[in-house]
Length: 398
Ligand code: PHB
Image (cartoon, rainbow, N blue to C red; front, side, top):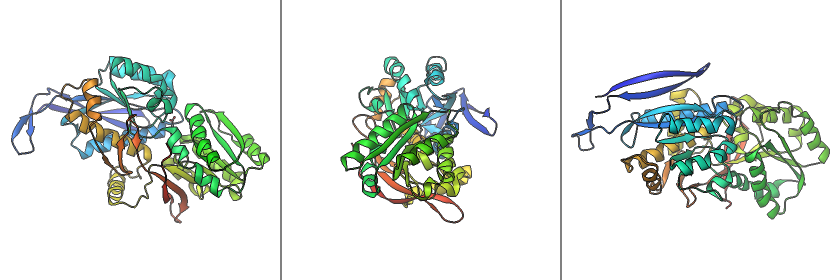
């Protein structure tokens, strides 16, 4: 056996990432028929998620999801022991791009997984395309990544902004009792979420009462924007916020009194995981579209939620599931990429087939994006906890 060393690497108070490093890689393990076979060398995976800034909690969920898969699979992907090298994406490309470049050029990571922010993903695309290394995006939804700027070397286990938002358009057009106000964080993802929603919403007869983008990562006081919503006479609101901004927005929406008579809709990130815990009762009634809910009533999801809760003492989030699935597809792909080159890996990713995920079965489409089911969710209170109850499935908008 090689010497397995476990390094605890403190990233910020209260969090820790376990890095598995294998020194002296030659060794042996049992193969499927019970015989001895040589152990393949360790594989280094770069994990690029925000460890700081407004999306840091999302990054923590993703680290946990990826680590959870490893823990369930003896720390191996494709039969090779994994060494995780973590780097801080921060709040966008200024921090995220150099951090990813370091993972590839200095740390020699075989692939980089993670990326929360669409602007970071867009900033990284050319570097991975040109260096022919795999970038496996486990959140950032920038539309161009699997559209106009598609690359053989960039794949995604999460969603694209336009699609997850578009899924809710027809339902809101049907339910809203008049014009709908659109509001989002002012950066790539916010703009694309609103555009995706607007397309299917207007096509279904919906009317827009106003549109506003709030400074990303800087807005704590939403009162002026909430006043503008009230002044517009809108009968409902559609929004994109995530992380800390989603907590402030939903709480202030309730405090301001809008929640009483102006239903709030959004993409599911608005009420996901720790964000929903922090919003508490203020979020009750918010309706969203997303490709996951802890409340999905399937044996696969129930088993996953129970095991995740046991390991982390909290429910999994969509971010954890997306990273868990990234580990699952890497597991299959690395088994068919003995040399670990980018070209081998991306060819193998093309053959992974359906993924049996807690979100439901999904597979990569021709643009390397998940083909998946979107769910209509509504925040409900059980008295003890608030959850995203699943109200139905939404037809996937293309
Ligand atoms: C994005 O920037 O693409 C993004 C960030 C946070 C989310 C969803 C999308 O929750």
